[in-house]
Image: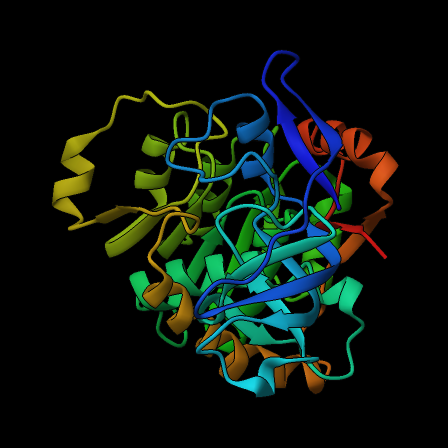
Length: 320
């Protein structure tokens, strides 16, 4: 089978022919229809991902059809259209995984589009619903709101009855996000913290994939007993922090990556996805946000666009 692997010498992704995997006890094999692209892939290519990976094959999420099952697996999985949230290996013609990280694909949505839903929405669910205990009517600031995770977060905030605001890179992305439920926002070339302070808005929850450079500005707009969920380090890994603001406002700061969570956590998130998000997809209340669909021979150009911040919403690669 063809698989997209990391060439460590050149720090780039390349296609290789390798043997197709066989499912072991408790596993299924998926014939992959499409795989989602994520910034974690960029970090893996550059050798900078902060944690265990497990395989040189890229890809954290995919959609497809179960074409083989291992011992101990319910035969009802065979032939089912599914989405998977894996540690690695999704960017290949076949991938094996535990049934713990599988969910039936949303009905009435083609598999290519379904491939872009799992990582984004599980990240949003994990950090906003599980970790930050988001409540109705609370105000949420989503940084990098025009990304796949950002669009999912904005829509999840609305589904949970809270109020989303955002920062993003361009006016085009800002317009896209407002059309999908954001109350308002500002591009990051402006002093976004001063902008929100000028509006008198304080946030109960902040979802931050940027890290360094945003810490003190986050603290300047966080409400008392607010929660800041750090999910990425696009702005760097070192920052000085105003601890007076942190303490006086009783702020909770959490840092989470989805990839290295145990399967039990992923199983819970996928159940929440099926319960909360899939019905909203069926009713047309959720936009899949897949804006870029690439062929396999376009993958390095796709990663270059992602690195440059040129994409809006989610990018996927189709394998069939």
